[in-house]
Length: 501
Image (cartoon, rainbow, N blue to C red; front, side, top):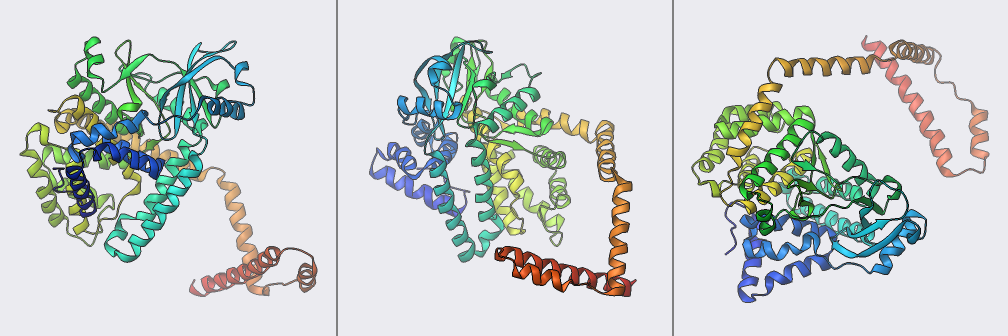
């Protein structure tokens, strides 16, 4: 039986239906990946996420869904070579000496191993090539999802606080980045800079001259998937320690840098010959501002230390919960979420479980979904899922506590206050840059407004007649009318301001 307790009711119904289907047909698990493939790449992304959560969908289902991570049916070698020539603008054999058959294929792109022709930063490379029809299919998926979101918002008012339409729009922006490999190259480069001093994580090098919108050429790295336990043994890597390191690294990226990899599944993580974690596929990246990072750290640390009043206060300070609600009552509700988790065994403590319970509690207090935190929450749950794959006894709170405590000690202490002052001074400087020019412009506008208020709006009838007589589009006439209306509105506003003054 699939675990459904504590999940939102749509999820419970879906999982129960899947469970019934599986009980009737043992092969249902293998049918689900095929069904998601037929539905489209957006649904494949959903399956990739569920594959990292055996605690949600069950171990068997998670294993079946794992094929969606990098074992999708590839498109033909002939089409791959054609796409290279389209995007790089040259015959492929003038750029590469040889190109292998696909070595991995996912929902958005597939990868080939190749050798470059002539000079380049790397001789052996991996070529990532977008699927020819992926953009069209994603657009179709998004249209369907948006329609569903609008219908749900219309017929279920309680769903509106979840911002389903806005969430689909956010998803569309993530997908847009995945469909332009130049943006992925930029993200990879930025992530490499921010993690340069992290000794346990690395990214492939870039070959900029052989990359374009639909083709990305990277350093080839030999290694194994992070969930290949046999390969970990050959490198004398302890899976439990690897899982801990993965969570610590993710928290560093999110809290320290405010920039994190947001598509963390085993297909995008590998272990190289030196035992380092190699991060792949930078199509979806997440950003979080310094203020949001502090709120996140305080909320997580509050659950760790069982300081529920502080968690509630942070929610109100951040504006996550309306000020009309009671801080004390919200703290009491949070205690009902946190205390059961602290009484569970290590293998039962789950970030997914916490977020599900927190979601249900915030519903009672009219908390609106924070779109800027959706990607972070999704990634946090996915990374925890990988760590739990590597170590069933993984304890999220125990591992994350030192990292969060250290971050809060620094940023809420004297050094953090100095950073706040520095940012405030920088903001004031940016806003007052070119202040004399801005003041002159403001005075000019005021003088014009005063003249208009005294003499009225001067309308050049001849100019208007000439404009209407021109063989121009209706948009030009509309623009003139709107400009006239705006000037009248502005004059009325000035007169009202003078009267009030």
